[in-house]
Image 1 (cartoon, helix red, strand yellow):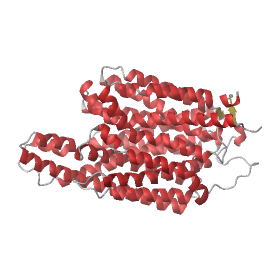
Image 2: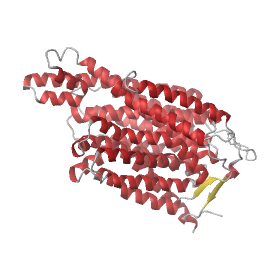
Image 3: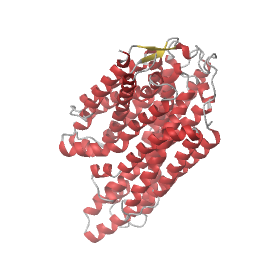
Image 4: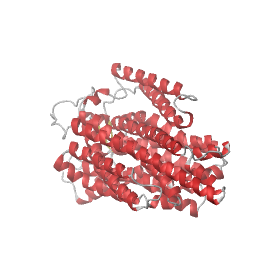
Length: 530
């Protein structure tokens, strides 16, 4: 039966609901990071509690991405996506009303549970809505929502905190979630695997424990170092548990995820690109936001506004990605996008403490354009390599690796930045009381606070030294980001197949031991079919 113009319009409106679903998760991450100083004052939160307000979300999200994808494949992707939206929205509303940091930590963990359902399932429902030839464009639009929230977070947070109570940073999620929920309910078809094997609960537990342990160790490393606190124990435990997970998955008759999927080059190398971008983006947001806010003297909202060139470039690159990929193939476009991203990161090694905003704007535009071009092509290649019956768990696996890349990026790049900053201060703190030395070495914000309380001549000298030291550390960090993006581009160009291989329609899909794409059921009428 021919598809009417009205059905096509409603299907793209359904995609808009999925874009909103991704947007609310992306916004939340950077909104919270911007609001942490306010939360510290309003909730009397200690440094440790502030760390856990962020870490609780990351830990629950990272650990549950794989089981969430599995449950979506088995019980219905739209159904589980709606559950994720309800959990995320409900926890956000509750978080806006709490009066203590401990309660907020618990609710942030619950928000992470909702995000774990939203992130993989937002993408995994696309094949049930769009034909293969339409999917690249749909993926491009969905990626805009995912990445748009990251640089927009400081803008939204600054406006909310300037005009409303601190709880508004969580309450703002509610209307977005309601709109997304209505759109998903009315416009997105249900899809699941009719012949799904029994759930792999042991694999789920091993994966959850292993990924959570690794994430915890990486999150705690900047505070305690690789040899301090519980970092070594949890990191080793995470490696052991992940080894057990892999061993179990390769032997199980009904694994949580068929690890043979990594034998497909388009999935493996596209996932590498996905993870590389997560690593690089974490560095840009972590280091550059401090440079713009403290050294260039902008407030949180002004900092977010100065990230808008990246937003515009991301959108432009994503819109162009589909046509470029159709002409040149995934390998050239993904590798080329990462190469342009490496160029943008290289430009970010050039600013000094006295530089203006122009160079930053150019670098953000170049880097954002590269990411915008590369990501839709990588995600579409990844989805094309997955059996439809395993779309949820496959996207959960790639999202898990991207999340680990982002967390690892903050830890590794943060350490590089911190090391370069402390090295740059050598010789400038002589004769200063130990407490002031510790505050100055601890962070750029601490150095700025110390400088303000010293006599103007001494304070000015200390501030210039701290700004130069931080800029040097940021340059080192961006150079590593450029190197990682360049290495990713080279590997992608060498190993990513340019186009998907032809599939024999009569043959079962590889990696799916329980049947072919015929085992995928699309159920429930959408509004477009009403």
